[in-house]
Amino acid sequence: MLLLQPLKNVMAQQEEEFVKRTVISKTDALVLSAVFPGLGQMTVGQKYKGMTLFLAETVSLILAVNANENYNTKLKVYNRDLNDFYDMKNRGSYTKTLSSYKDLKSRNDELDNLNSIRNTALIVAIGVYAYNIFDSLVFTPSATESKKAEGIDSRIKVSSTMIDRNPAVLLSKRF
Image (cartoon, rainbow, N blue to C red):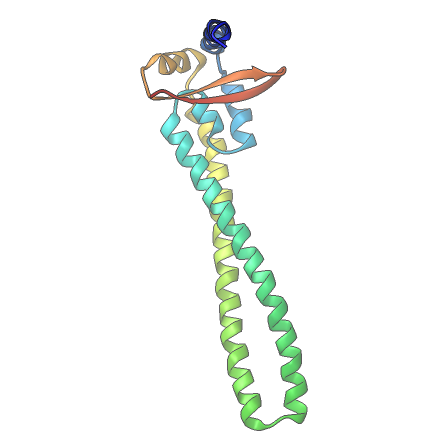
């Protein structure tokens, strides 16, 4: 175990040197931003902007998926109860039919609200993605500016690397 420790240190130093030599171009940042918002910005040194875009996209997508699942589930129940209402309307009592109608109306309003939430979350996700691409095209620094940003001492380091001959993003935190 003690013999492996110096080997780990040497490998970590070689990996750090490789990462420092890696230069991200505007094209690479644009490709990473197209994969998921914020990745390109994080790799060129705009860590806070990248994290903000990443979190905004993640939250809006989670909200859209969750609202969509709730909407679909409640729509199935609503349609089933609507069929029961039509059956009851033809052969049921007036008070039960009226009560069922009021319940269906409130469920319909709830479905409308869920539909609005999922549409709004989807529009926000599309807006974040579009801004992300625009930001990568217009505001991404050049490779030399990116290297200057990487040289700044910070606690969080985001850089590009190669893992098994595939490009990847390396996120590390210094304590």
